[in-house]
Length: 534
Image (tube, rainbow, N blue to C red; front, side, top):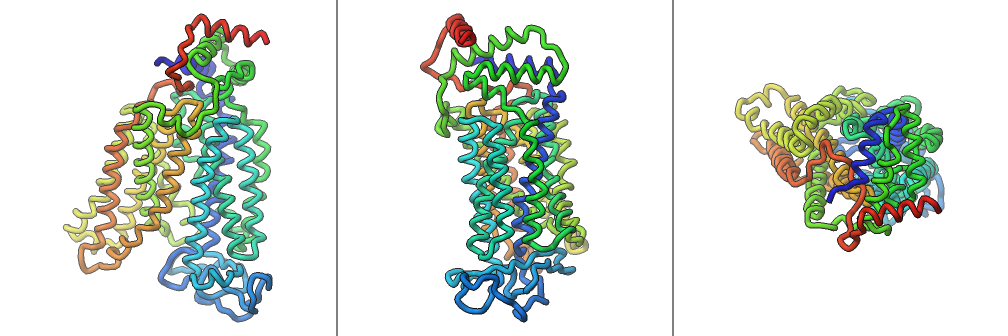
């Protein structure tokens, strides 16, 4: 069915400037909010230890350690959660051998958690936060589709900052974990709505540019700079939370989505938002009134005014197929991404540069996807980058047969970096497809499916520990197995992406047509005009 409302709004946006001042203001504001959110999430990776077979802080000891609060431990002993030892100070331990730094968390561990070592507790914290992101994305997306984009988005952002700051006052490990789970809940809900909001006012020629710009990587840079100011994990939580607080004022720069207002049949508010966009961009739109009338008539004539749920993602056979394909490609690509990211964490040996450099390196190839996808389309561009990434990993067979891996020890790290480039571009293109394939009434929920699949991949990647066994065997070809597995997985992602719909050059859909609602166009127009006079 032809979506008249989507076509009418696309004409209005094109004629008023697809990426004018109104769109730039919205995109920049939400991008900074996303960067702050990323810095808050990555905090858990900085303030907890990195898995290592060596003791990363050999100078830590139990000498002089004092409990912070006697109510959490029945005896006069403080248990560290960063290493098997404890340092009384909260300063970071650096290691020139591993090229990483961690923060010693002087937190009390209750008796029922004491059998676990510090590394296991740290992984549980990370799993808890990622699980919060998964649940938060589901809940936040539903509320975003029901109650709007703007207000829920900033409520989530404020909640995230509040509990992130409270992390700095945690005195026990369970409290610390609970705060990080709540931070994950709020962050997951925020990320879904913040991705959708600017895309609904940007023209079709600029949506891929905005998503592939990688503005979120600023968050990793922010956190790395913050660690130059303080190495105390409590102060770092206060500092990063305080830096994000002024950005709450961007509430007055981000408008409510006119598309969502239109689909909710709040026609006057939608028209006011559209006319504000035209005024800000200073481009006249001839016949804007008739275009708005066409959009209203399409909404009234083909869609029920109701609360949509995740069941509406299965509205048709095609949507079921698209949703399953989206879950698979996001899940597998994310798993490979985080597995390869583990291999590229230490590139220069500088602990501060290595925090953000792996993400910055990915940007050039991601930007190239903007040009390539305009030539090939979303699906075939996804196929190209995913399969290219897969073959880059599989090329380890050739390097092993020629003996180049033995003569160049850093070749495997370079291979991991090159393979991760294609995976990052694939995930960016998947984000574009997730936003564009679902109509406005369920767009947040559809995007949440992609986000939760990506977050689930982060958890699954931690279960690929069995592949590390092959890497330790250097006298045989076992060290090639992980790359062969990653390469095969990415090739399946490329073929599965062909099941997704092609959305390049098509209007952003608005309505989810109802099979039992077929109001004639003239009758729908009459109803719209009647409501406008109320």
